[in-house]
Length: 197
Image (cartoon, rainbow, N blue to C red; front, side, top):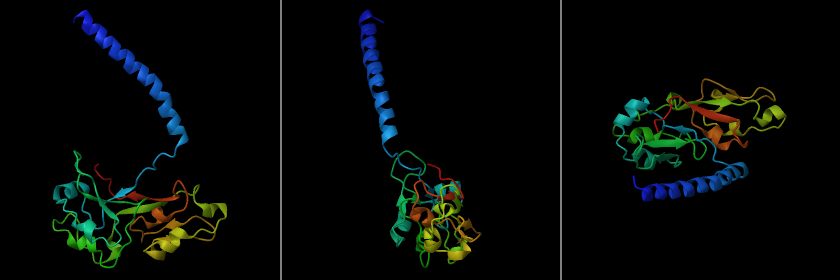
């Protein structure tokens, strides 16, 4: 390597290190003073087969997203990930509303979503309640998750002034998480199978 090359690399390192010293405190300041995005709860639509088979079967056609009357189904953006173009539901943004007819499951041509005729067969996930975050444990009379749950008392109940209890009827649709008024959410969906993203 010539001395000129060494000087060039030295200058490059000097500016890179200087820039890093300038930007690192700025990044720390931004992280301390803004609300960072909450962790997303991503779910496959109702009727999804196990993830590995789902990725191999899904045609990435978007028919399920078009059929969803609640516009709850989105498609992963094209890219290099194995999930690119496949459907998902972000429970924080727009949950599955367990619509009449479960239309997304009937338009899937590949079998990645199996047709369902009974909402009790949906198995997207399971709600989990954080007792410390739920305002009911602080003597507030909040019933949002109970009132809006599409599966009703088969999925959630609240004994007295206590936090809701999740029952076997929970299908993991995400409505409770989407509508929960606390930040962070006191009730979130634990996906039955993690997405490969």
